[in-house]
Image (tube, rainbow, N blue to C red; front, side):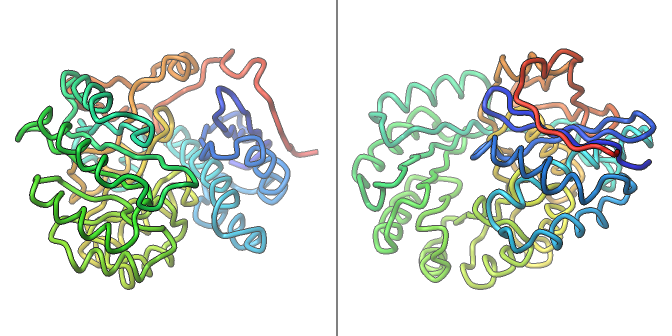
Length: 363
């Protein structure tokens, strides 16, 4: 099952990867969209030549080829995000070659329906009422939880904690006692502010407090986690199992949040999941990409016996759904795991027509 070509496409601001084998089996992956065109070039021009002609079924071996042979190009950001797209495509090939859905290849399907929580961003520029209106819509859709995100950007530290608290209070009234509410500070607080806010969030009964301080401040994260009973979460800015080890040991977070389209794909995410289980941490992946990223995430969560919390969901995307023969369907607060071979999302033949394309292939 040798690799014939590796192509990357930028469409609707997303970066998709297509790997084809000499037998004609095609796998599709997705990278983080933070720098789509740069990542797409990295896939085709840096990773592609390193794996052309190699056996697509050797996912772990190829993961090491891609990561270790390019490590001087960065272990955070574009390098692991590009590897993620290729790794996902390789696992998709494995599933299609064996006729098995991804969750079965990862060990089995503990649950066929994954509950989802609504992840609502943009809080920095919203009024509390505007955010509460969005939360109300999510509750009416049947979401099994809600998380509100601040998305501060560069001018963020302690910018408006009083407004944040009013926003949380108003959204909590909408959620009541039946729909859990969480708060993502997007790294926006100093340590003292995070602790003060966290204690108020505890009193309101929030489910978790995400990224309260700067992502690189493990010591500060640890102080916040130690001070609060409210579970503290982080991990979307970590990319390898070694970073997650440090996040758990030094930052002492209660919940770890790897993102499969950022942290070098399925191969590394499963190792992070095992590490989280060993350290007795809750596993709640970060995921804001509603097509392949979410499909892979629900497979991973289905295959972990202890991963039964509602998962992150940013909502249907009609323009992305149009790319696939059978897109994911959100119904009654959950997504059914697609049990077709691979991750279950198949690109339409015309899906990538007109997209920006980068490619490398066997001579």
